[in-house]
Image (cartoon, rainbow, N blue to C red; front, side, top):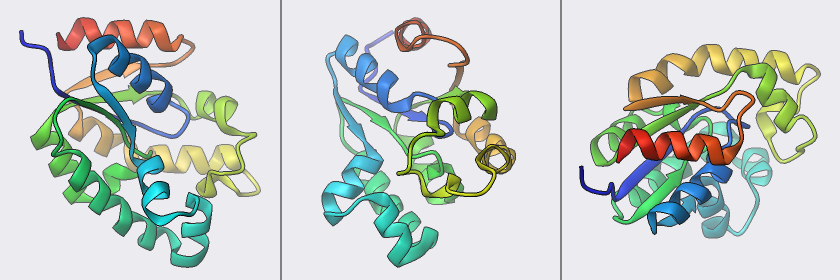
Length: 170
């Protein structure tokens, strides 16, 4: 099988998309990009600020444009934001333009990896674990529908997950 030139990582916050994406890109000799970081670069502000001024819908509008742009570029590993799959256009562009890997992770593991992070607006609630469970309930079917491969990151190192992805896609 030829070396893939577009790999898109989807999954919930805290699943390891950015960390694993960097390792995967390095091992494949591809460029790595994170859609959330690209949104911040284009707007000049962080994601919590976008949420504060434009709400989640405003952020999702920006995310849709960025994902449309980034999924068209060859030689790239793209890590998407956890909610990228909520928009049908994003699911379509991801599915049609590259190999999509869903990094699966339980809400409990997500919580362990993210509870100190104040830059995640959707879990700045009285009960972040409950918020993560609700998000997962809504998004899990969308992740599965969009993915070509499902790989668990639960209790695993980024290196082990990257190795498994490489074995499955090459």
